[in-house]
View 1 (spheres, helix red, strand yellow):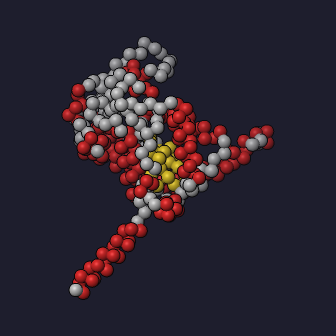
View 2 (cartoon, rainbow, N blue to C red):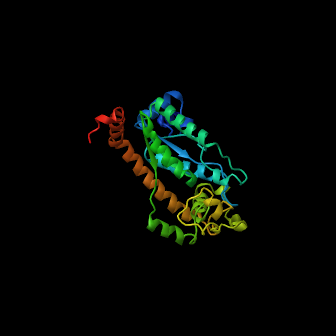
View 3 (cartoon, one colour):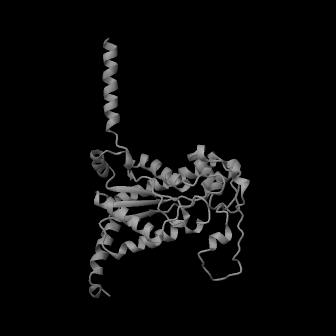
Length: 292
């Protein structure tokens, strides 16, 4: 009987300790725990951004959502930050001809992202990190980031942009195969999904459609045109993922997460960007007084 009572005591202590652990997933927090989470995160929040679009014949429409959230959750587990729920309001006009593409208007994706940042700031976050899983957002996010300077903000926005690591990429190639194009839904992305979401990854379907670059506007020089992606990859698939492996995917995911953990730590400690923003907005009130 004493042993049983001791077991219950230990169990209650264990449950108490476990119940005190704060989730880093925003949607799982109670309102009182949210207040604690803002403090524990040092007022730092991550928004993993993806989109709904075709990824060859082998990957799900939500691939970019899965991967941006995978990076964010793995990183937050190591360096606590609050991770925003699934965010798929992205720029994807280049794939509107493909089934399953959800392409919101440019005005809406801008407004909803800005209002999301404003609401996170109103709820206490002062540093917000965007983890983007969709290449089609790059130009949008660059401009959106610059546009943050259009008026004073009470938060600082940081966009995570991992760097290539040749050593890790070499290991990944050795664990799968070399992919001449290796772009959208190619060998690397399919390998990472095989590691992160194996139930929704169908490597055996990779060869059902071509991922070859058709290069249909190579007659033009010194030109950028919005149709460039469709001109190259009309199947919305760039590469050959037929030899993708989860082992290769783990190499790539782990390196991205390592860099993201380091970035979160740097962002938390950063005092320069907030100070520069404050000075910039003050100077912008009266540019004639800015020292020349």
